[in-house]
Image 1 (spheres, rainbow, N blue to C red):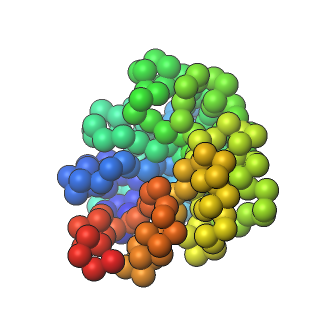
Image 2: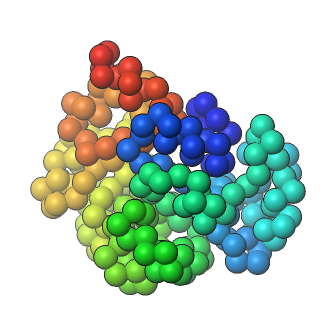
Length: 216
């Protein structure tokens, strides 16, 4: 989203062309049950429309400009547009069932990792899609975050790097969990990610992967 319209096919293609290891996207259910790719619960910030995603049909979403003439995509379109591994974030728990159906239909367990802030969404997708890799996300968390991840069946934690400590990382690693830092958009944050020995990091700026090799 740092260089292209957020959560659009153009942004995903750009990320793949830049050689990113994986592409993260966000999922909401439309009024008629489509898996719309959008970060917010409403369309106001990222399109020229207004209102909640859940109150709009897919056809109504298609009429909106998501930036630079891009349209709001659905999950299947992203799967067809790029070949890179994906991390699909469930923004509302209701999307878990719809995502599970697509993952089973298209045999996506090897390619798609599923993440969410919602413990119950992580647990549910794990039940619905055997073998799926899952990530519990947190912005603010307590000392129980590792236990929460394990209870939900997650294999990794994605944590706000501004609040992340070595103690939390070491605790998670000690329990066999990977740790991803978000969002790493500066060289200072990249240096911190490396110092904490994180297993991965998300960024809005693909060029940080290239420049970071020499400066971080």
